[in-house]
Length: 265
Image (tube, rainbow, N blue to C red):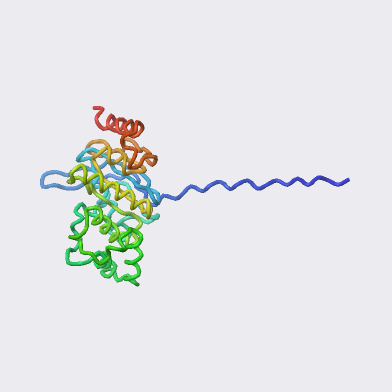
């Protein structure tokens, strides 16, 4: 009698959770003024994964910018630790690049290409011309590679500033309230430019703001911090929203929820 051979298909392997790119664990940050020792944050913890648009949101004085400076390596925690790719952050490095608030910090006497090539040359990177050409193409500036900054719109200057930082191939891009001084219309255009650029390149972004609507629009994840000293109030997902979501009920409901968190007392 022939036995029936039962074939059991191998179960699909369980998906391995993605290792966090950057980890902040129980971090307390302090700085000195002329009169006081200020505790900016108290035991803040969060993880950031590759491709996140991670927003630090909270009222003025809650330690958002101080946290960003610590991630950049300019401030050392008095408690807790920060790691990038499992290596402790002890100093600034090209794996974390800052995009400053003023995009007019591009050198006006250099073209788009020359501005992007500059940090590569200063850091003695190999094949400067090809690396610059690749990033110029990725951010959609090929037709403007020989243009000077004064001929560019605000959104294009932002792309050049981001491209200059990304040319170094950092693990994380840091932006500290880049649109705080802009009028509402220009701010909206720049936000949309940033989202379009992220959609093309999927860089990892840490973005500081005190605007609730900007946080929900820009962030795929939002860390809400309490008033001084900054502590974690909540971590929220906002990846479902885009530039066309701002008038939607779900978008506005999340904004109200965050508003209640920040101002309940």
